[in-house]
Length: 133
Image 1 (tube, helix red, strand yellow):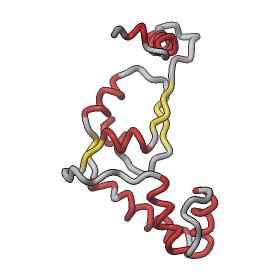
Image 2 (spheres, helix red, strand yellow; image 1 turned 180 degrees about the vertical axis):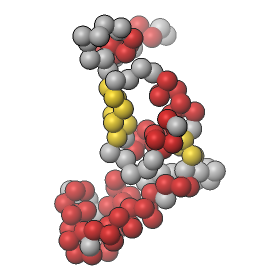
Image 3 (cartoon, rainbow, N blue to C red; image 1 turned 135 degrees about the horizontal axis):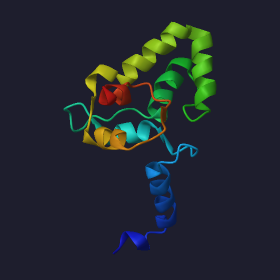
Image 4 (cartoon, rainbow, N blue to C red; image 1 turned 90 degrees about the vertical axis):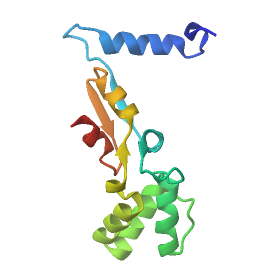
């Protein structure tokens, strides 16, 4: 099977062209890194441990609120903050994510070697920042 036979090959080709274009008038390519990337590219030394996704955090917040864990994540986080306070929300996030326990894997280095114009994330972990330094 050739890479050219992949259904997304035309899009991959355009991405590669955008990444490696040297024209200063062209914007280049940006990437958005989410918790799915972090979950598959980081390790804690415990093979059974995985970085939490939004749903994992929602279960913790919803349990404390006594609400449905399948609601809108931002609304539930806002409710939690309103009810328990902003610091309580930050504490739950820090405890759930446990950022210091995670180490960026080789995939982070590979990703950051590419000439992105921007690397964006909404993740609570600092894996990108640590991999870049």
